[in-house]
Length: 230
Image 1: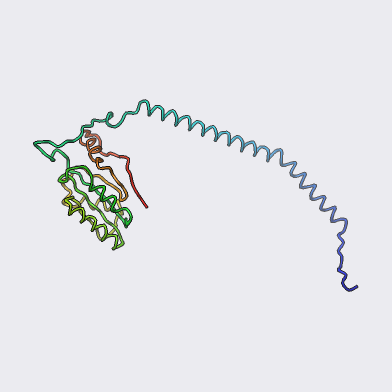
Image 2: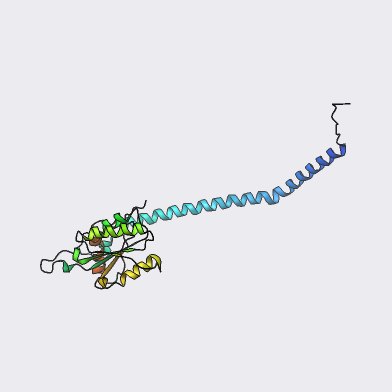
């Protein structure tokens, strides 16, 4: 008898129970399929159709809006009074309003040169432009780099000031508010805010400030911008 493995024989009643359970499950499926599963699938189909219809309506609506904008939308120069500001032979640069440019920064190692350089290159009389670099950096190395960049442009005759504060209360908005408290900006008539990675075109002020000068009911001009952020 050595080497002979024992054999187990399942009773015939086990097969009968198995078949009975399978049959009951099949009956339950048939009972549930028609009143529950089929309606759920139909509901899902209707929802998909409804969403497709909504998407189609949205596309049609946006298409109509785009066509109407192309046909009837007027450029800002036509909707509002716009007259370029030029140098006056008698008044000189005093014909230009004094503009404050604020550039808030926070550890902007990669982009600080771009924004400071772009602001310093704005086509606006130097005696009518004040650039304020508001540095909330926590990295001493970055702070030193930003300050040196400001000094470099200041040595070229640009009216640029490097400003820091002891805390970061209010974060970016707090830095902007703190900058407006400085005595040297009290005579500024307009404020322009550039983020640290903005790269305004040289004629940005000449294209935007006239809207504020010639339209007293306008308090804010939002423009398109170029920026670089690595």
